[in-house]
Length: 157
Ligand code: PNS
Image (cartoon, rainbow, N blue to C red; front, side):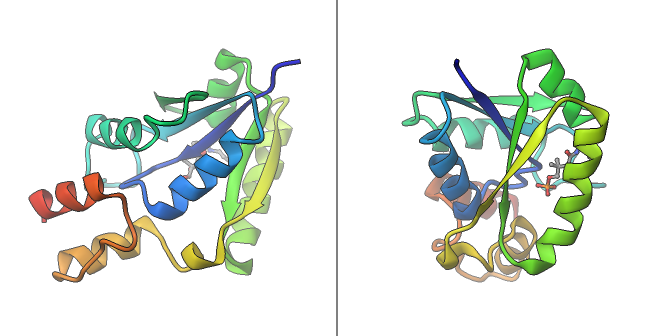
């Protein structure tokens, strides 16, 4: 049986923490779909095409990974693609409460199971929001995001 999992997110922008989860998940499933929420937040820094371009660039070496955009409910995307496993990274206990709610809601709405992966400790403090804040105030983000993202952040901010 071939198992495809989906790794969803806003990816505004993709961080080394996201990439770590994507890499590790891709080695455990036959195929991994990275699903980028089109309308992420009220005002994403990067439009969806830029977020997809960056994702495609950083997963280019992973043969079993595909990047796609989605709108609406994640379970509907899963249904359309025949995916029954969602993979989420957990950074800290503070992530758990909301992730648990989402996992239970998604399981209620559709035939999907959420598998949680603990993030690697070196990335446990990382978030796209913090990276954007550091970059906005001129801080060095080279440890936190792939180089392609560093360049795009510099262009945008
Ligand atoms: O990177 P993020 O912003 O934490 O990702 C959140 C995301 C995109 C995974 C979540 O907001 C989502 O799945 N949105 C799609 C809408 C949906 O299905 N909502 C119900 C889930 S309980």
